[in-house]
Amino acid sequence: MTIEIEGIEIEGIEIARAAEATAAEAESILRLEDVRIAHRHTGEELVRGVSFDLRPGRVVGIVGESGSGKTLTCRAILGILPRLFHISGGRVELFGRDIAGLSARDWEQLRGVSITAVFQDPGSYLNPSLRVGPQIAEALRVRGGLRRREAKRRTIELLDDVRLRDPELIYRSYPHELSGGMLQRVLIASAISLEPRILIADEVTTALDVTVQAEILDLLTDLTQQHDLALIVVSHDLAVIAQTCDDVLVLRQGEVVEQGEAKSILFAPQHEYTRLLIDEHNTYGLDRFREPAGVHHG
Amino acid sequence: MAESSTAIRINGLQVSYGTGRHRTRIIHEASFDVGVGESVGIIGETGSGKSTIARAVVGLVPAQAGTVRIGDEEVSAFGARQWRDFRRRGAVQYVFQDPLRALDADLTIGDSLAEPLRLQRRLSKEQIRDRIDFRLEQVRLPQDLLVRFPGELSGGQRQRVLLARALATEPRVLILDEPVSALDAANRVSVLEILNDLRAAGTSLVFISHDLGSVAGVTDRIVVLYRGEVVEVGRTADIVNDPQHPYTRLLVGSAPSLHTGAIDREERARLRRVLDAG
Image 1: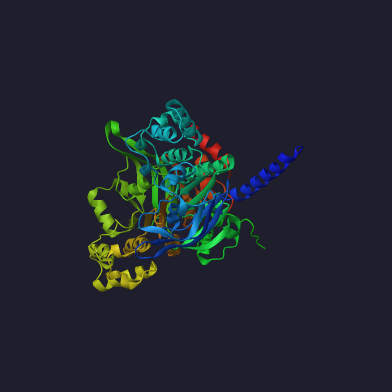
Image 2 (image 1 turned 30 degrees about the vertical axis):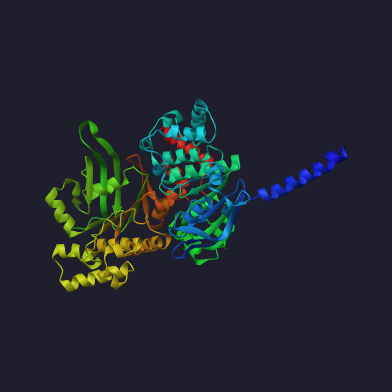
């Protein structure tokens, strides 16, 4: 930067510094610090101390079985915990703001726009009596401010982006006319329609065939790489997490038993539960036929 | 009569559902064997017809063409009465997907386990009890479960009860349809270990699943079904390491693995196009 005028010089540097500071902070768009979630009446803590940072273009994986608290954690991040549960400790910082201080109106502007989610059962999130295309277009009109025709054009583009063949036909289809894999792609199209910065994918491929699962996971990976989307992938399958995530949390009965970079967890698991998950693949999965990378047999 | 060396022999099997104009062919062509003491996996996606093959083997759906032989008997030619006698002998047992609905909620676990043996009227009370105790131990369940009801058991325990019940009649062939899909990791491993014990003990297994991973862990050979057709049959290690058919290659390349997959995203996309075109 060449600076010629004194006044602007100082201002320029200050702006640069401020931008740098924001960049450093903006590095993390979601931060969980020792988050605890408890039942309001019994006080029982179902999630006990989850912490992680999520940055643009990065993928955090949460692996755990039903009852491990992974879905509760996601719902806490989205501000949609079931009525009987509340965040009983720690804090969630979303785009630099503590969510405890967010009003209903703030949430309305964030949820579905800057942070969105896709869950396991795609059928239940679409209105069965409406064609799928207009359901996405509606959101683009109401929340994205697009005109009717633009909204339709953009929706077809999105359906194409999620690799649905013949997007115009899909636009006109009813939910029951589509397979589970197609519906899941429709929901992902809907979830990314307003260009969110964070997408939570909670067991999105669990009900799908492996070939379709791989296609959806490939698609999510593309989105993080091409659009700098930050992604949270939740799965009971460690291999799904291993293939998509940079960082991994292993959750068991509400506790993080292991956390770190995906590579280090896979090759040097510390907790016996993580070792069980890995052993299963190595003993009974495809991995028993494959040479474990990074491990050398003498 | 000399014992046949094949447990199941399926030849040119075709199966359709519906009649007339509404007839839909589910299995176009399936031919493969399961050797005595062999463990064979059937894999394929939803709607590929893998459960239909199993149902045809045990006579729950009729074969439209082709033959199914179990041991020395051509079961595809059986009438209703022959099927009833055949089933009562319990030489072939079929464990379904849903472990909650497959057990009678009003019967104790002990009664559920004894039922198939009581129907046979061959064994005394004591013999039945001994047999059940042995099978319970084999599936690693405690004795005190016998007086409990299905609703009091976890999914993993129920699945093991179903295995014990299927084993009670000492079947030569055990057909399992998605036996571990609904279980958590610890129970999955435990059931797979039990299946490996059974293999070692000489029971012929047919393991049906969409999950190549768990099938690969407990089978000698794998039959790959795609859109109602057997597209590949091979030794498990060969299917995993050197798949031939584009669908098998896509399947192997899509199966989640802790290590880098066998193929990359571009190759998967290419295989999908090949399959769509075909």
